[in-house]
Image (cartoon, rainbow, N blue to C red; front, side, top):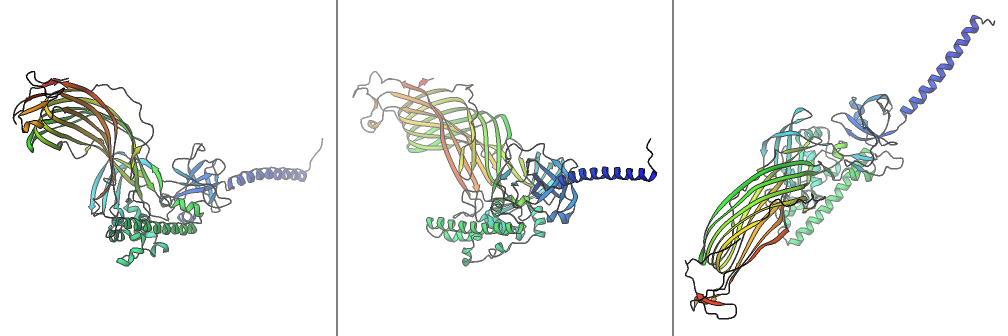
Length: 631
């Protein structure tokens, strides 16, 4: 048996310990190196919450980590490389060992580019990020409480109280109506004012010029930020010499109104072009300050679209009705009677979505103050309208009138207001119904008629509305068979010709920020009764009328109508913020002949004057014609 001396045993133990230590150290070093490897890049920084979002460049997986050290937080840049150990949920940034805990990790790498990210090609060996994240968007739970704090012609301050993430939250929201609103809002910090004026000067005429600002956020931002040099050069206000300043185009556009209309357009285009060049210069300045690639900076300071996602709206059994007495003098006669139009039932099933313009740099870095502009509102669904029309009409002489029906003119709110939260800036959506109705009358000769008509129409609504109007959007809902066949009953007698068209227009009104962008879309349901009798040309002389028989055509149809209104008070020729840019459109959806009737024959005692005609005594001004009934 071999005996090892104590000294030899100690040496063996030491050698074994050193060997184990080396193995452990090598393993630890390998893991540490792996953990310390700069695997990821910062894609966005929220300095308000102290949360930083980063993405693993190899897998595409994203995560967020918290930075409690304020000094470190403000030294981090978008595009900067960091190291992350997802096992220990720690991040190493700016050379600090495991400085920051990972608070959230995406479940897996996204299979395609997210809607809420602006994809760009990663720069070669650069520090710019592979994408710029847009702000989060959410729909507030429950209806808000809204209070007007101060209302001026071109701007307004509102207070919203709502529940956000289970907590009662108050927002002070500044609504700026165009350049005039930005210039005159006394609660807006001057540093933010110059940014907004710079941006507003670049807007084309068909963009919404309504800016929404969280007042508390912009005031906090202004305490630590000043106006960039490129904007200071453009912040001088004043008189007529200031028309070279593209950010003061309100005054210049007003001056240009004095000239020919084409000159107004030319000057407006020149101002926008110059404003665009200044905005590009500003983006280059920001790119330099943030060490960001210039092409990425251009995207970071350009308007990007952020959509709320569809919001289901469903209402049923809405109704309204109106009766109109008719008693009007006309040329050589009079028209009298009454009309009643009833919307017996309205059912709406639709998804509504709001899209807004945002500047990514206003949310991912603190170089900009944050604002939101409404862009569009979309609806996809069906609107069912069941209507009934009752009309009694007596006329003598010549008439051509459009008589409006006394239906409710103010929007009838059908669901509580919806508030969409873009980061911490609320965008409001009100949904209601408006009604219009009229009776169009054109009569020549003598007419006594009653008309009763009932109809039910299910109209597909799949439209997106913005500053260019309304257009088809997405796939239309599947057609549903009509549950109700239209019917019409007509009783009449006439000599001459008459056309009467009662119509009703129930419109779905989608209103973003109480007038910033409003769209009315709906079906105009109408019935047209066209009566043709003999022209009474001989009644003035011989005392006889030419009676060629009587015919009646009854048509039923639907026109789809829309109206889009958006505030652009600084447009040439606009007098105040109340003047809106308005776009109207109409397209026929259906028209069908419900019936065509030959009515009556010439009197037997009448002497024929030509083929198909007969003579008969002329009616006196108040004579009653023998009615004939059509079903």
